[in-house]
Length: 143
Image 1 (cartoon, rainbow, N blue to C red):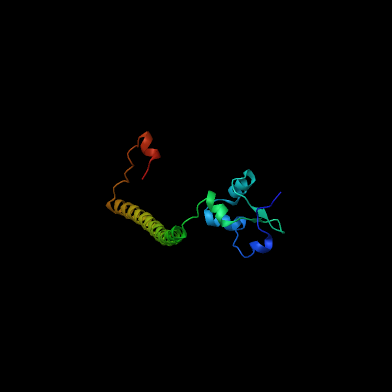
Image 2 (cartoon, rainbow, N blue to C red; image 1 turned 90 degrees about the vertical axis):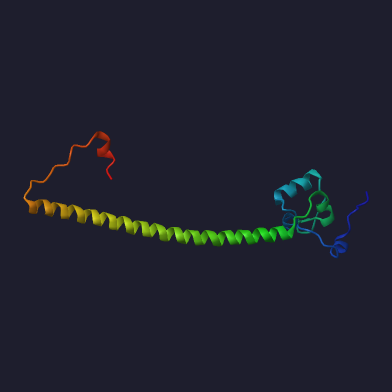
């Protein structure tokens, strides 16, 4: 049987992909490429260390190379999105902090209002007014 593959010495002069490099070059997962090799869709040889050596022409015969410019644009968009997300998170935290401060001030003002009302009622000498009896739902949904 004649081996159509070149010897390792001859192949060292030619570029070859490892499984990881082939994965990056095609955008396919290493597992998918390994299955394609096992099924015979792509031919590959193993080197002395047991790693696959895949000829780029053989690989790209089945799986076209991905556009590296597209990858760079996607990476830039990802970085921009991460930057925008950090900025929005900081703004959200600032607004949440401000909201808590406003709620605290509102509660303090309500307490002051109730105290002033109690003092005014006491100074007028009128008996304190009882709150009107609230309905069933009003007791549970106080503001």
